[in-house]
Figure 1 (cartoon, helix red, strand yellow):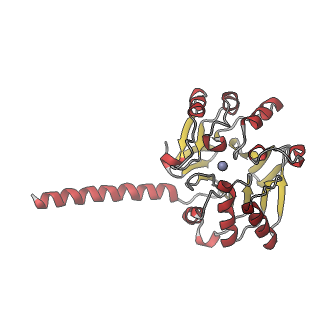
Figure 2 (cartoon, helix red, strand yellow; figure 1 turned 90 degrees about the vertical axis):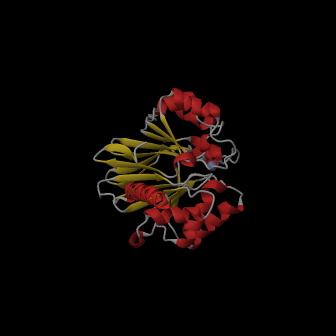
Figure 3 (cartoon, protein in one colour; figure 1 turned 90 degrees about the horizontal axis):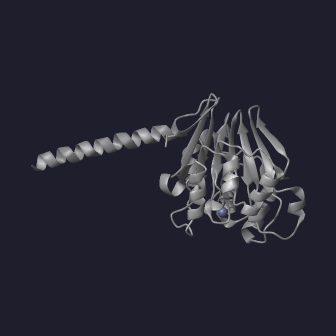
Length: 288
Ligand SMILES: [Zn+2]
């Protein structure tokens, strides 16, 4: 009887190891030079997204803590432990804190940020480090377009220049919103942009259509109007949210996303969420 139990436990352990190994292989498989990989890292309650293409690493926000370093260690090979471009969508703690940790630990070639500075010490710290390390930096605004590689570009939709210059308005109102275009495939990154920003973008009549939407402000009730999601018409919508999450995402946001017919993926449920674009085809890995 005892032997039988040992055999069953052994078989279960073996199956477990095979599943874990397969999952490890799926998320760590090397990407070919023609691929784009976008990883919504699991940093808890905050945003951090790593974009990799042709050996280039772009980091969009860094989450609320040092956890970003462990996350990056999984995806940056030891011979390429550097960030080519760091983007800070805005200076809230759940976006900038991790970026400062990255700046302290690895080379960063260039930074882009929203022009509206915050009075929070965390934002001062980040800006001081950028200056201290002499990193080329620029403020992004609509309608700038930045070419990263032949096939990869960033199209900034928000904020407009006049809005940066205004001294009022919250950090979230001036959060960077931009499209990452890779051939025919687009990702829309919204930081913590508010409904008011979404209304501005809708009124301007831009082409917002994107295959993947990074849902604004962790799915809070202050973002994600139904009309906005319908205009973006994403196949996938990613909510970057922690388990301890101030009741994010909000029920209304989930309803709007469902009504728009997009597939919702949450980092608190799935862990990191990975998309691969191979030969012009977008697919989540593993498939959801
Ligand atoms: Zn946030």
